[in-house]
Image (cartoon, rainbow, N blue to C red; front, side):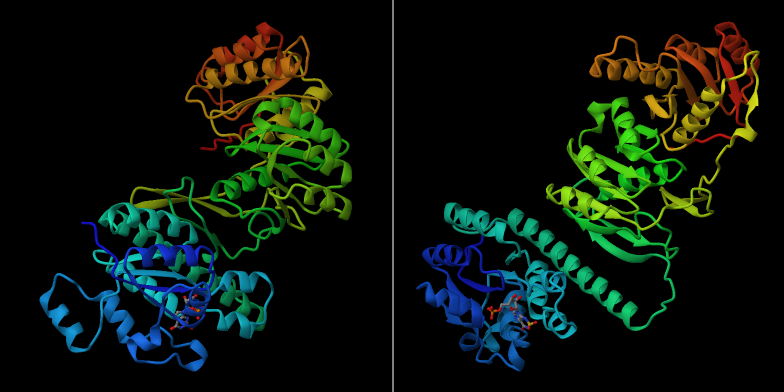
Length: 523
Ligand code: 93A
């Protein structure tokens, strides 16, 4: 049902769009009520407005702490127009209906962000505003509630076109209203937790403490938040965001994947991640060489990716990284020159952690399933040279051996089925997330051919590479696909019923193969 607006209450801190909106309500014949500052702004613009205190007969008291927390407001918002007792009661108490509320809250978040005093922050906790928003949203059957400046134009247009607001619109507005008050309270809770933490150090670590509410989850219709597990493990949870837009759920997830992967390597390393999978990983004598090699693996996917480094970023590294569009950069630190270069990319999020996670450290991981969650110890497994068992006639060369260990470490961070080609300390083809291992092998080989084309080379990058598989080859076909792609050595856990066939195929193709005895599934 379209409901006309006979009386509207406007009480806004951010006065953007206020006057235009009030004029359009006035043109539609609505009476406009406002609190002190809002009423003043409207009067100055020549809009007819009734001071709320005149309307309710109750003045603003306590320096404005009680402006709208009166029955004349909440009764007018909350009474059910379709229940005769409600109608009789509001009449008895001289309460008039309010059909629309437009509120935006004291700027608590902005006050905290500008580093204001504790007292200032407290004073900017809005009480009356959220109360009105929640009252109006509860009674969305009869009342429209506007909480964001963008909604003003949209609702004014609907009123002008249809003479009021539709139930659908009021429901949508109510949903947005509760999202706003929830986010507002979360910001207050977060700030308070920090205040308490600062005042009473050292604090007990509280598992599952809310760090940040997120704008949304993996998709915009999902809500989300970031919780701390109390371990203070260096990484995404302890990172300082030096610049850039707010991190999204997917940013956090991808950045974590990139940083955990880059921490696997002792030499200077770069990991580029897209959709939680590495699309380029390299180790080298310095970050610059590592960047060039990591980017070469898949320059197309790297666009808009997440970059992780395991050393302090300097000017040259920053220049190279900012030469392509990047969402997030994470590293233990960045020198002043590097920071200045990143600062020229306003939206780029730069995260500095002052440390690296220990990939071998114990810990837990969780994943939800219908009606519960699965817990396991984190995959802290790492194979070293000494763990490898050569199973073919041919021994790997020293260079192959280095690349095999490197490729298998990368594999641990690639979604299964994972196949990783590597050469000279860099990935040259990555196949991820396929339901069949041979498909992953084919995709990785194809990607390496594409990367070669992009680099203007004739031979696929996988030519003369080594290949890693996160789990055993169930049949010889995956191995044969790798040999056909140009791999000369293979690393895999082993343990298939058909290991002998796979080893025979490797011998036949002249490949060297090592088995790790350790699997790195990642789903
Ligand atoms: O101090 S409050 O928590 N107490 C109230 O009763 C109250 N009513 C509205 N803050 C209150 N407001 C807020 O005042 C609104 O949410 C809005 O942000 C602001 C508008 O005040 P003014 O119209 O005086 O600029």
